Image 1 (tube, rainbow, N blue to C red):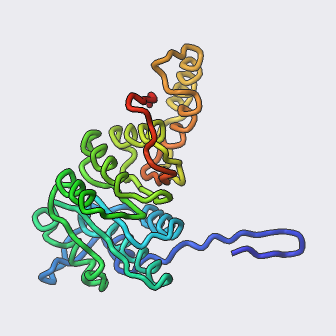
Image 2: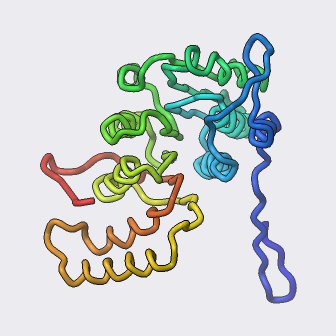
Image 3: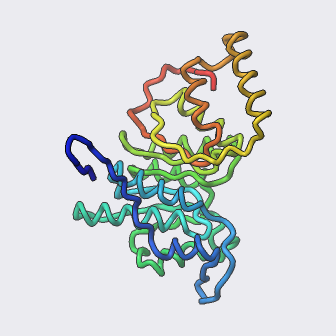
Length: 270
Protein backbone atom coordinates (compact mmCIF):
# COMPACT_ATOMS: atom_id res chain seq x y z
CA UNK A 1 0.00 0.00 0.00
CA UNK A 2 1.29 3.50 -0.88
CA UNK A 3 0.21 6.53 1.17
CA UNK A 4 0.79 10.05 -0.23
CA UNK A 5 1.24 12.90 2.26
CA UNK A 6 2.04 16.16 0.48
CA UNK A 7 4.96 15.26 -1.76
CA UNK A 8 6.17 12.38 0.44
CA UNK A 9 5.48 8.76 -0.43
CA UNK A 10 5.26 6.12 2.30
CA UNK A 11 5.27 2.41 1.38
CA UNK A 12 3.63 0.17 3.97
CA UNK A 13 4.59 -3.50 3.76
CA UNK A 14 1.85 -5.69 5.23
CA UNK A 15 3.07 -8.98 6.64
CA UNK A 16 0.93 -11.92 5.50
CA UNK A 17 -1.47 -13.45 7.99
CA UNK A 18 -0.13 -16.87 8.94
CA UNK A 19 -2.56 -19.73 9.54
CA UNK A 20 -3.52 -19.87 13.26
CA UNK A 21 -2.59 -23.57 13.55
CA UNK A 22 0.93 -22.68 12.41
CA UNK A 23 1.09 -19.80 14.87
CA UNK A 24 0.05 -22.19 17.65
CA UNK A 25 2.84 -24.66 16.87
CA UNK A 26 5.40 -21.87 16.64
CA UNK A 27 4.31 -20.55 20.04
CA UNK A 28 3.90 -23.85 21.93
CA UNK A 29 6.21 -26.23 20.06
CA UNK A 30 3.39 -28.77 20.38
CA UNK A 31 1.10 -30.45 17.86
CA UNK A 32 -1.48 -33.23 17.65
CA UNK A 33 -1.29 -36.75 16.27
CA UNK A 34 -4.15 -38.42 14.35
CA UNK A 35 -5.25 -40.21 17.56
CA UNK A 36 -5.75 -36.80 19.24
CA UNK A 37 -2.74 -37.01 21.54
CA UNK A 38 -0.63 -33.90 22.09
CA UNK A 39 3.11 -34.24 21.35
CA UNK A 40 6.25 -32.15 21.20
CA UNK A 41 7.10 -30.74 17.77
CA UNK A 42 10.86 -30.39 17.40
CA UNK A 43 11.38 -29.97 13.65
CA UNK A 44 9.85 -27.04 11.77
CA UNK A 45 10.84 -23.85 10.00
CA UNK A 46 11.02 -20.57 11.96
CA UNK A 47 8.36 -17.91 11.73
CA UNK A 48 10.31 -15.61 9.39
CA UNK A 49 10.57 -18.48 6.93
CA UNK A 50 6.83 -19.06 7.17
CA UNK A 51 6.43 -15.42 6.18
CA UNK A 52 8.88 -15.96 3.32
CA UNK A 53 6.80 -18.85 1.95
CA UNK A 54 3.61 -16.78 2.00
CA UNK A 55 5.38 -13.80 0.38
CA UNK A 56 7.02 -15.81 -2.40
CA UNK A 57 3.83 -17.72 -3.23
CA UNK A 58 1.92 -14.44 -3.41
CA UNK A 59 4.66 -12.94 -5.59
CA UNK A 60 4.57 -15.71 -8.21
CA UNK A 61 0.81 -16.23 -7.80
CA UNK A 62 1.30 -19.95 -7.45
CA UNK A 63 -1.64 -22.31 -7.18
CA UNK A 64 0.42 -25.49 -7.72
CA UNK A 65 3.37 -26.33 -5.48
CA UNK A 66 5.75 -29.20 -4.69
CA UNK A 67 7.59 -29.71 -1.42
CA UNK A 68 10.35 -32.08 -0.31
CA UNK A 69 10.11 -32.67 3.45
CA UNK A 70 6.89 -32.42 5.47
CA UNK A 71 7.87 -33.32 9.07
CA UNK A 72 5.27 -31.80 11.44
CA UNK A 73 3.61 -29.93 8.56
CA UNK A 74 4.41 -26.31 9.39
CA UNK A 75 5.88 -25.51 5.96
CA UNK A 76 3.22 -27.69 4.33
CA UNK A 77 0.35 -25.78 5.92
CA UNK A 78 1.95 -22.42 5.06
CA UNK A 79 2.25 -23.49 1.42
CA UNK A 80 -1.24 -25.02 1.30
CA UNK A 81 -2.82 -21.94 2.87
CA UNK A 82 -0.96 -19.56 0.54
CA UNK A 83 -1.77 -21.41 -2.70
CA UNK A 84 -5.39 -21.83 -1.56
CA UNK A 85 -5.67 -18.04 -1.20
CA UNK A 86 -4.31 -17.57 -4.72
CA UNK A 87 -6.62 -20.24 -6.13
CA UNK A 88 -9.65 -18.61 -4.52
CA UNK A 89 -8.72 -15.30 -6.11
CA UNK A 90 -8.33 -16.90 -9.53
CA UNK A 91 -11.32 -19.20 -9.29
CA UNK A 92 -9.25 -22.34 -9.78
CA UNK A 93 -8.15 -25.35 -7.74
CA UNK A 94 -4.97 -25.46 -5.67
CA UNK A 95 -2.65 -28.50 -5.65
CA UNK A 96 0.26 -29.33 -3.35
CA UNK A 97 2.47 -32.39 -3.68
CA UNK A 98 4.46 -33.10 -0.52
CA UNK A 99 7.15 -35.80 -0.50
CA UNK A 100 8.22 -37.27 2.84
CA UNK A 101 9.28 -40.90 3.20
CA UNK A 102 9.28 -40.60 7.02
CA UNK A 103 5.85 -39.01 7.56
CA UNK A 104 4.08 -42.07 8.96
CA UNK A 105 7.12 -43.50 10.76
CA UNK A 106 9.24 -40.74 12.28
CA UNK A 107 6.48 -38.10 12.51
CA UNK A 108 3.54 -40.49 13.16
CA UNK A 109 1.37 -38.73 10.59
CA UNK A 110 1.43 -35.41 12.44
CA UNK A 111 2.09 -33.33 9.32
CA UNK A 112 -0.72 -34.85 7.27
CA UNK A 113 -3.03 -34.57 10.29
CA UNK A 114 -2.24 -30.86 10.60
CA UNK A 115 -3.34 -30.35 6.99
CA UNK A 116 -6.57 -32.26 7.71
CA UNK A 117 -7.24 -30.12 10.80
CA UNK A 118 -6.86 -27.02 8.62
CA UNK A 119 -9.33 -28.40 6.07
CA UNK A 120 -6.82 -28.68 3.22
CA UNK A 121 -6.63 -32.46 2.74
CA UNK A 122 -8.37 -32.22 -0.64
CA UNK A 123 -5.57 -30.17 -2.18
CA UNK A 124 -2.71 -32.27 -0.73
CA UNK A 125 -1.10 -35.26 -2.42
CA UNK A 126 1.31 -36.89 0.06
CA UNK A 127 3.93 -39.21 -1.40
CA UNK A 128 5.62 -41.32 1.29
CA UNK A 129 8.69 -42.24 -0.72
CA UNK A 130 12.18 -40.88 -1.15
CA UNK A 131 12.32 -37.75 -3.26
CA UNK A 132 14.80 -39.33 -5.71
CA UNK A 133 12.13 -41.95 -6.49
CA UNK A 134 9.06 -39.70 -6.44
CA UNK A 135 10.24 -36.59 -8.30
CA UNK A 136 11.19 -38.34 -11.59
CA UNK A 137 7.70 -39.87 -11.73
CA UNK A 138 6.15 -36.41 -11.42
CA UNK A 139 8.32 -35.29 -14.34
CA UNK A 140 7.35 -38.34 -16.39
CA UNK A 141 3.67 -37.65 -15.66
CA UNK A 142 3.99 -34.13 -17.10
CA UNK A 143 3.28 -32.34 -13.82
CA UNK A 144 4.00 -28.60 -13.68
CA UNK A 145 4.34 -26.34 -10.66
CA UNK A 146 4.88 -22.66 -9.96
CA UNK A 147 6.49 -23.03 -6.54
CA UNK A 148 8.93 -25.46 -4.95
CA UNK A 149 10.32 -25.90 -1.45
CA UNK A 150 13.43 -27.99 -0.74
CA UNK A 151 13.87 -29.17 2.85
CA UNK A 152 14.82 -32.82 2.56
CA UNK A 153 18.05 -34.74 3.13
CA UNK A 154 20.82 -32.16 3.61
CA UNK A 155 23.74 -33.71 1.75
CA UNK A 156 24.89 -31.97 -1.42
CA UNK A 157 24.11 -34.90 -3.72
CA UNK A 158 20.59 -35.49 -2.37
CA UNK A 159 19.70 -31.79 -2.39
CA UNK A 160 21.13 -31.41 -5.90
CA UNK A 161 18.94 -34.26 -7.14
CA UNK A 162 15.93 -32.59 -5.50
CA UNK A 163 16.72 -29.30 -7.24
CA UNK A 164 17.45 -30.98 -10.59
CA UNK A 165 13.98 -32.52 -10.78
CA UNK A 166 12.12 -29.61 -9.22
CA UNK A 167 13.71 -27.39 -11.88
CA UNK A 168 12.24 -29.68 -14.55
CA UNK A 169 8.83 -29.37 -12.88
CA UNK A 170 8.98 -25.61 -12.31
CA UNK A 171 7.47 -23.18 -14.79
CA UNK A 172 9.47 -20.14 -15.94
CA UNK A 173 8.82 -17.35 -13.46
CA UNK A 174 8.29 -19.87 -10.67
CA UNK A 175 10.12 -19.64 -7.37
CA UNK A 176 12.03 -22.27 -5.39
CA UNK A 177 12.90 -21.77 -1.72
CA UNK A 178 15.82 -23.58 -0.11
CA UNK A 179 15.70 -24.20 3.65
CA UNK A 180 18.73 -24.59 5.95
CA UNK A 181 21.11 -22.66 3.72
CA UNK A 182 23.40 -22.40 6.74
CA UNK A 183 24.37 -26.03 6.12
CA UNK A 184 27.58 -26.03 4.00
CA UNK A 185 26.10 -28.49 1.48
CA UNK A 186 22.93 -26.45 0.93
CA UNK A 187 24.88 -23.20 0.75
CA UNK A 188 27.13 -24.75 -1.91
CA UNK A 189 24.07 -25.94 -3.84
CA UNK A 190 22.54 -22.44 -3.89
CA UNK A 191 25.88 -21.04 -5.09
CA UNK A 192 25.96 -23.67 -7.85
CA UNK A 193 22.46 -22.74 -9.00
CA UNK A 194 23.19 -19.01 -9.01
CA UNK A 195 26.44 -19.52 -10.94
CA UNK A 196 25.31 -22.18 -13.40
CA UNK A 197 21.56 -21.99 -13.92
CA UNK A 198 19.20 -19.27 -15.16
CA UNK A 199 17.91 -18.32 -11.71
CA UNK A 200 17.96 -14.98 -9.92
CA UNK A 201 18.12 -14.25 -6.21
CA UNK A 202 14.78 -12.91 -4.96
CA UNK A 203 15.16 -12.82 -1.18
CA UNK A 204 17.23 -14.18 1.69
CA UNK A 205 16.35 -14.69 5.32
CA UNK A 206 19.46 -14.02 7.36
CA UNK A 207 20.76 -15.35 10.65
CA UNK A 208 22.00 -12.71 13.04
CA UNK A 209 25.79 -12.66 12.61
CA UNK A 210 27.07 -14.66 15.62
CA UNK A 211 30.73 -14.24 14.78
CA UNK A 212 32.96 -12.17 17.10
CA UNK A 213 34.25 -8.87 15.75
CA UNK A 214 37.82 -10.18 15.57
CA UNK A 215 36.77 -13.11 13.41
CA UNK A 216 34.76 -10.85 11.10
CA UNK A 217 37.83 -8.65 10.68
CA UNK A 218 39.98 -11.68 9.80
CA UNK A 219 37.39 -12.84 7.27
CA UNK A 220 37.43 -9.37 5.69
CA UNK A 221 41.23 -9.42 5.47
CA UNK A 222 41.20 -12.89 3.89
CA UNK A 223 38.70 -11.70 1.30
CA UNK A 224 40.94 -8.78 0.42
CA UNK A 225 44.01 -11.01 0.09
CA UNK A 226 42.03 -13.50 -2.00
CA UNK A 227 41.15 -10.72 -4.44
CA UNK A 228 44.86 -9.99 -4.85
CA UNK A 229 45.66 -13.63 -5.54
CA UNK A 230 42.75 -14.66 -7.75
CA UNK A 231 43.20 -17.61 -10.09
CA UNK A 232 41.01 -19.22 -12.73
CA UNK A 233 39.91 -21.68 -10.04
CA UNK A 234 38.05 -18.94 -8.16
CA UNK A 235 34.43 -17.92 -8.88
CA UNK A 236 34.03 -14.76 -10.95
CA UNK A 237 34.11 -11.50 -9.02
CA UNK A 238 30.43 -10.89 -9.79
CA UNK A 239 29.47 -14.31 -8.42
CA UNK A 240 31.74 -13.86 -5.40
CA UNK A 241 29.88 -10.67 -4.50
CA UNK A 242 26.56 -12.44 -5.01
CA UNK A 243 27.61 -15.39 -2.84
CA UNK A 244 28.38 -13.05 0.05
CA UNK A 245 24.69 -12.18 0.27
CA UNK A 246 23.90 -15.77 1.25
CA UNK A 247 26.82 -16.36 3.64
CA UNK A 248 24.60 -15.92 6.70
CA UNK A 249 21.28 -16.94 5.13
CA UNK A 250 19.13 -19.71 6.57
CA UNK A 251 16.60 -19.57 3.71
CA UNK A 252 16.92 -18.37 0.13
CA UNK A 253 14.32 -17.79 -2.59
CA UNK A 254 15.33 -18.02 -6.26
CA UNK A 255 13.22 -17.26 -9.33
CA UNK A 256 13.52 -19.35 -12.48
CA UNK A 257 14.05 -17.01 -15.42
CA UNK A 258 13.96 -19.53 -18.24
CA UNK A 259 14.82 -22.97 -19.51
CA UNK A 260 18.21 -24.64 -19.50
CA UNK A 261 20.13 -23.41 -22.55
CA UNK A 262 23.67 -24.27 -21.41
CA UNK A 263 26.11 -25.98 -23.78
CA UNK A 264 26.88 -29.58 -22.81
CA UNK A 265 30.18 -28.68 -21.17
CA UNK A 266 29.15 -25.53 -19.30
CA UNK A 267 30.64 -24.94 -15.86
CA UNK A 268 31.03 -21.88 -13.65
CA UNK A 269 32.94 -22.17 -10.42
CA UNK A 270 30.97 -21.70 -7.26
